[in-house]
Image 1: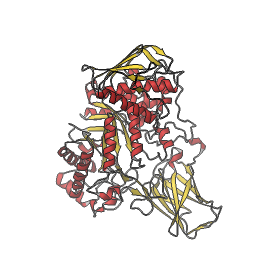
Image 2: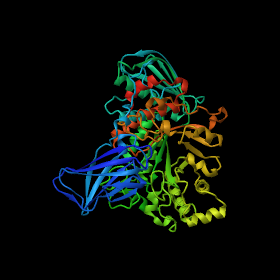
Image 3: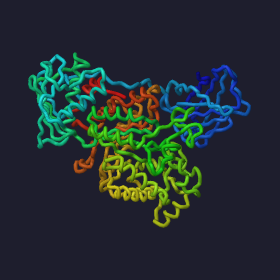
Image 4: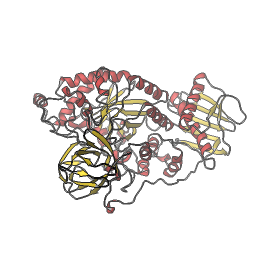
Length: 636
């Protein structure tokens, strides 16, 4: 039983120096609390110049806050200690912006504290909550993303599955694979494909047509026969997935969705890159959950999984050359080199993937036509590395000479140190061996503009190369990283900041445009290949409504399911540059996603909105249809 409760109230102000968090720790146990400190994690952080009221000390590292009460402060059973933090680094917008987890430490004993949702003045709550309409179905088929051409004139009211009558061993194996996919996602539903004769089944035949694209397929429904014509293996699997979706819809909602018995579907994807990014550094997800997410992507015919394996909060990938990365570098909490962040404050929070687990996950993804893009986020977001191996930092650099936007001090690998590149050569060599994807994503995001300016080694390099600021020094770093990847026969992918400071030669470089919607256009004009993933539309951690009780982040505003669905990634682009727009990607950042209920609420149906943006031509999209179909989307 937890004996302590922490309440928190946000008092806004025009100037963040005047904004306040009013906190109250209540002792609900039977013993007096004395000689203690309180620690909590919260995304609304105390500012560097914060002033305490009724508290004597504050130690803050990013989202971790440790508060020392006034000397002699005791909390009797049933009583409350109240204190205030005046001067905040960022405002609160939603109920989950306050303390997510907390503990009290007394006489070396850690005790968990229950954190209630952050409260705020009533006027901050617009009352708006996420909304997805019931929707409207014009064609009685359950398919997502919607195909390019659907011409079906007749349906059956009976549930029909498919008998794989004719087909090669490979074609039957593919049908069995999609059978298994459907069963994993919907264990209670019937299999869509069977392999023995039955009068109640629809006969399914296969044809391969070299004139179709490798991802393209066509379906012909004619009475009791269906023919799947495909260009390549991926197109065959996509066609089978469509048939499995049709069966599942007819089974799940027979009054709405039917089985086609006359007509055609002709289809191929709009973009070659239809991706989902997942951050597992903030909150770790085990191999079984990653496999489940890959199944969900395959159901939505998405074909890229960007695996954000490292960040300030934890390193998640086994590197045999540096084994401590997944020992101390993958842990945070009491007694660890890294303090708690973003939940689970009172416990040691940890998790990593062995190389054998990664190989199994990559093999599963490959079988579902999904490329796994590994991300090793450098040079910034490297607190986990630098805490694990302090020798990688310039020991003469002034401590806390810069802070990342998340509040981490001196968190960037130093471009002026040979040790940095030796580390990266070894890490990327192991990563390249694990992941067949042609790209390795190297991050490159959110490096503070004051980074390295107090490092003597960096200053000497800047003078030698006539580099004038941190962004030009980052560009120098990126060029060296690109050379490392070239030797490994890999291409460089990164966030849009890779282009800063003069950037690097765009040839063969793929950038994710995330900061604003205009960045996609800017990068294409510079000659980069681009994946469109603006935070304002495609970041799944953004709140879906403005109301205080809607969970999510707010720095990019509100991204409702409808706005995510309606966004057109090619808007405003010069037609001559459209070939550089490689596709779209949903990004799942997990600061707020402590529990699966929150994850599912925030990720779905928006993930499928991005899936349809990547697959379906704008003229064939329909928000009302999508909303109606969203009831059947699988979730984690």
